[in-house]
Length: 249
Image (cartoon, rainbow, N blue to C red; front, side):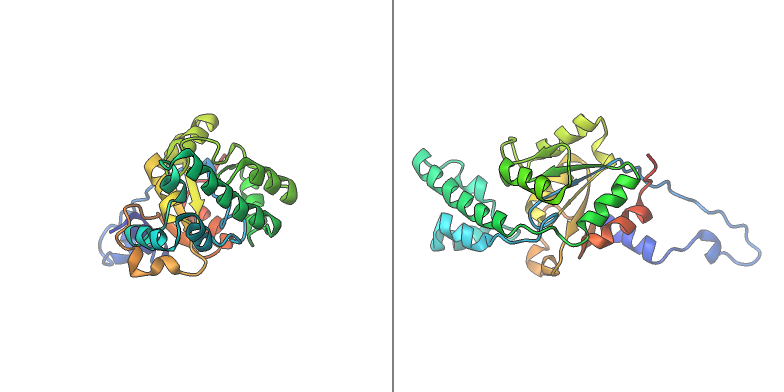
């Protein structure tokens, strides 16, 4: 049974040993201490902000229709476009980066905060839980996000930090900066292939934001890394943290 399922069953159906004992037996209750949580690291696009980039159109524009379909069939959990182009010739790679940047600029024009993000961050602040950010977007997008919404995440690592997600390096860098262990941190994001993989490889807890339930599809069943928790809204996250973690400073 997966960690996510076992935890969910425990909290949805709490039963102590005493509830199963006969009237003449002596009950012994065993309480497992909650793991300590000292920091939360967020993805940006599609997690802290409403998804506005048409990634499918971006991938087709970069790869071409035929190559897009071929790569998509080999990667059911999603396409890593930056990985796809990293071995291209300099000229072809530069054109690809320009196409990606154009889609990202269009996204910045429509940037919106994700419902529940401000409230969640306020709750984390009230418990002195650190907040970090890891994105595969560029630094200018992170700077605009901080400026537009008055929220600060530190460290906030963009794709200029190498290697980027799904490599665990950026999350491990944040843990080192905070002087905490990876198992004292949760990674929250909307991507199995980037956010969950990054968190699991680093040894952190992971929470998948799946607003539409698309990851319930059987096509995602074979993926290597599965989240510890899954929510459909950021509004669900803080109660999940309170139920499953020690949030003492």
